[in-house]
Length: 86
Image 1 (spheres, helix red, strand yellow):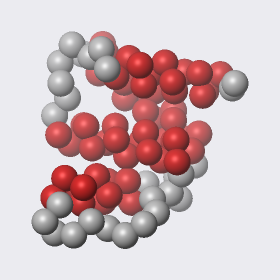
Image 2 (cartoon, rainbow, N blue to C red):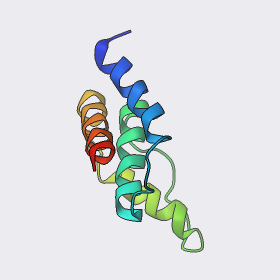
Image 3 (cartoon, one colour):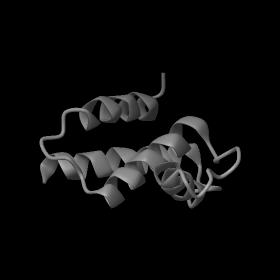
Image 4 (tube, rainbow, N blue to C red):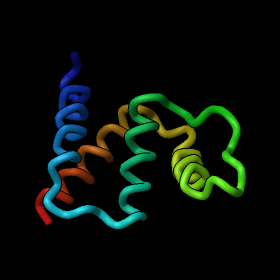
């Protein structure tokens, strides 16, 4: 396993032990970076207007389209480290 992937998985574990719950915008950023790093570009149809949470998640992930998985993983790791030190 690569060092980046190991650090990404450690950051995922750390995200579950944050002392404070991040605000919604930060949660969306974490979600989108995680999905881009783990799965690549967004696929499928955008959720309908009645699914506001699903739609927000989809849109946040779609904004990262074209971002390399490695770059998304590193941004996720950096954001978790910033949240842990806050």
